[in-house]
Image (cartoon, rainbow, N blue to C red; front, side):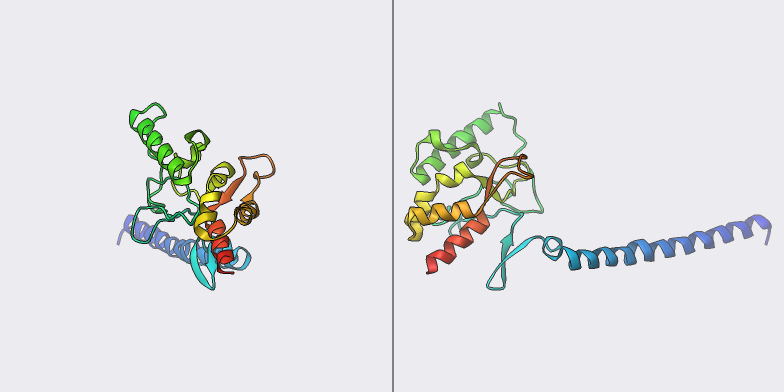
Amino acid sequence: MNNSVTSTLRLAWASLRVLLVLTVVCGVLYPLVVTGIAQAAFRDKANGSEVKVDGKVVGSELIGQNWNFKGTDKPDPKWFQGRPSNSSYDPLSTGSSQLGASDPTLVKNVKAAKKQVAEFNGVPQSEVPKDAVTGSASAIDPGISVDYAEIQVKRVAQHSGLSVAQVEKLVKANTAGRTAGFLGEPSVNVLKLNIAIKELAKK
């Protein structure tokens, strides 16, 4: 066997050994270590910020969901409703409508949604906030503005059997302030709020 062939075989064997070592280190050991640290130190976040009721997972703090009558696309009036979603709140298929602000289709959809939201909540169209008729960039935003929550209070109170004061108190309790005190706007987590509504309505 000549020197060139021998050198080639040695390089190939050395490369193979490096590949095997890196595969074990980067593909097995490193992921296991990172996963172990995440589970030990940040278990809730590492598992998707799951929300549990009576030991059962009912959703995630990070992903919005529909609050419709079971098996339909009709919103249930006893629950607070989230923002519109083009992906049906499917985290595997996120994204906005990609329609520009001046697109006639978007304008038409927003006008129709504004009328529907106003009628559903028994308020004038002028009181309907923009997040009630437009989806977020991800299409799975779990939160709504305080303004959107407020126009839903009377409707939820009426259909859940709670008083307006009780529902307003729950809205305040489930309102998160601005990030770091100055970034973004206060928001209301719809899942947590509806869980609180359900729990109070049982009493």
